[in-house]
Amino acid sequence: MKRIFLAGAFMTYALFTQAQHTFDNRGNANVGIGTETPNDRLEVIGRTRLTRTDSLKAVGQLLMTSSDGNFLLAGSSMPSGAWNNITQAGDQALIYSGSNYGTGNLVIAPWSLVEGGSGMRLDKDGNVSIGLPFSAGYKLAVNGAAIFNRIKVKPTANWPDYVFHERYPLLPLSVLEIFIKTHHHLPEIPSAKEMERQELDVAEMHQQLLKKVEELTLYIIQQQKEIAELKTKVAAIHH
Image 1 (tube, helix red, strand yellow):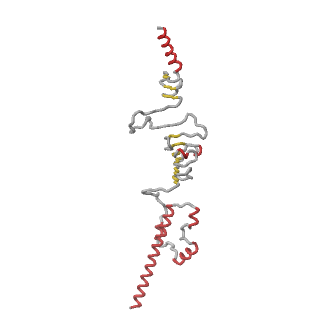
Image 2 (cartoon, one colour; image 1 turned 60 degrees about the vertical axis):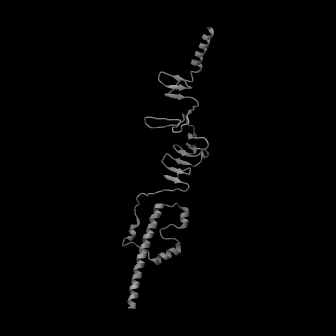
Image 3 (cartoon, rainbow, N blue to C red; image 1 turned 120 degrees about the vertical axis):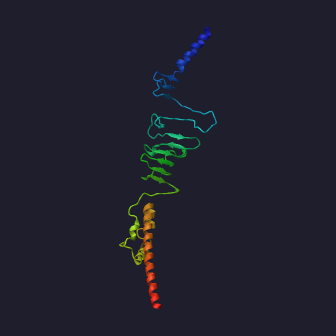
């Protein structure tokens, strides 16, 4: 009987002394694991593992819900240059914020590109860069090829319909010929050397090309009138 009593006393002592840091439920309804003073509904000190036992993959291993729809992962203290991540093993997806990317920036990249790599970056100003460490002031910067099913450009002022106004100063073809022989490019169109030094504004270039097409149309109409006049003169001579 004494042995049973001693064994029970020893187990009681172990539960209330040695295990007191493992589980703690205070009067404020906070639960702590590894701490005697939990400050939240659940506070865990130490590493935590959540594991599924079934083979069904339709539902994830961790589900978090909140009334406001917010999901937050953060460290209790973030020293200078530190970063947080959501990742998988084997060089899979990685989301992090590193010291090389400034404050408030989010990077999605493979593990091998941590701290200085490219991947995709969203900065605090809403600028996105893909394949580049920084967006260089653009809302979207892409280093590489991109394909789109459709692109829309915002309304552009000064569309070159003014070319068809009666008072538009269309260059004579003789003057245009001299300009081309001298500069080796069309007026108002950047030269090859200029394009090597500066960026191409697609909307502006499209506007300039349309202007040249409209000017070319005027030249064709002008030439057609001259051809018609020559035909009339030739016909009059033969009669």
